Amino acid sequence: MSYQHLLLLFINLGASAVEVQRPRGVPISRQFYEEGKPFTCLDGSHTIPFDRVNDDYCDCQDGSDEPTAACPNGSFHCTNAGFRPTFIPSSRINDGVCCCDTTDEYNSGAACQNTCELGRKEKESLQKIAEVTKEGFLLKQQLIQEAQRGMEDKKAKLSEVQSGKNDLEAKVEALRTVKDTAEQPEKEAKERHLKAWETKAVIQMEKDKAKMAQVFLELDDDADGVSVADLLSHSELDPDSDGSFTEAEAEGLLGGVSKVDTVAFESIWNNIKEKYISEAPVETPQEEMKEPVSDSESDHFPEDDIPEEEEEDDDDEEDEDDELSPPTMQTQEKKDDDEGTMPPYDPQTQGLIDAQKARDEFDEAERALRDVDDQIRSIEKEISFDFGTSAEFSYLYNQCYDMNTSYVYKLCPFSRVAQKPKYGGSETSLTWGKWAGPEDNIYSVMKYEHGTGCWQGPSRTTTVKLICGKETIVTSTSEPSRCEYLMEFITPAACQEPSSPASAELWHTEL
Image (cartoon, rainbow, N blue to C red; front, side):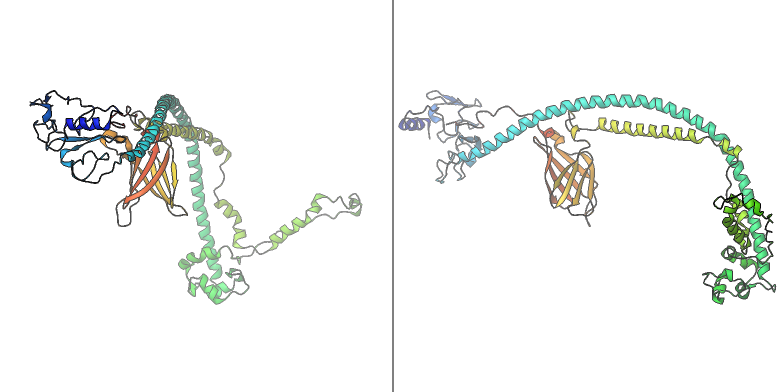
């Protein structure tokens, strides 16, 4: 349709609205077509009379005289009033597929309906997104300011801790010297004591061998070795002490044989020496004779005021019973066993063992130094971490966020991602990998790697997509492909600065 035809149509419709006349397919912003004036191609190649504009014949090489389908390289402007205007290639004019305002299908016979009003919903959605983006970006600015203050505080703390470390290192070295000085005489005294003890241990072992030889001779009455019959003559050797010492039990003590010689007897000595009662005669201590107490002396003691010696008679009787009972090898060797125990340090040696306090003070200072080293490493790690271009993501450090579905998902930014069955079971965990967004927005995606391997599959990985929002929350989890998980995580730190207000060509009511 020519410009004249448009003008005629406008006159027929009436003058109820002011409309800017232009050829079909030309946006209102292009004021190149003026009626009655020659038209110069936009590439400057030709100038033609105005009645040859949009006459379905391509005069200009750039197709600027034919915004409809006449030129193969032309483009047609769909106004799409109430929605988003757009340019389409000339090849899509009259192809049966309509722009929402139907203006491109003027000669195809397609039954098009104007659906541009449906764009209002998209517009409302975009407006909400724009509001969230604006508010999220303001929160991001606050996060950046807090991150900068926090970074300055951490650097000051690091300097303070490092200064304190120097003092602590000097203290540790001074205490080390004190400890080493105190430990030297202690070490020498302990070595002397140990050497004396080892000598006693050798003597004790020799005594034990002598006693074993003595017992062997006592048991071996016929000088042909210790037999089952020899053991049965000593009922105290009954293993279960049930009052019935059988040949089988005696043979068991001999290691399953009926008789042993002196060499084999060594292997059973430890099994019987605690119970064996020596056959050697033991002198029973004579009871000391006590002078009888006269009746006159006894009268001086009321019945309830008996002297202590008499009150302890019961205990003395028990002791006497012990002395009169048959002595076993254990009772005979009690004194020797006491000698076999590591004796306490003598006063002189004990006096030299005074380094414990120095050790305790040194150990305490050394622990404090290790704690300081751990603190320095922790602060240095946090300071050097990549938290975004302006450290806007630093507030996520040392934080975790959960999401409950059939599983419990846990996202701890810069640390790990975990998945655990809701009603018990083992946890699957992945560790922080890297920022993995595109080059123009690398901080839009997090990658977590080195997870537990899938059955007959690769190691698990998780991609976390960061979305602008006013909250900080995990909104969804999915498994797009086997062993590869996807999380969506809303955070203000992901918000970008809002673009300038939409131009009149984005949302408008252009006619």
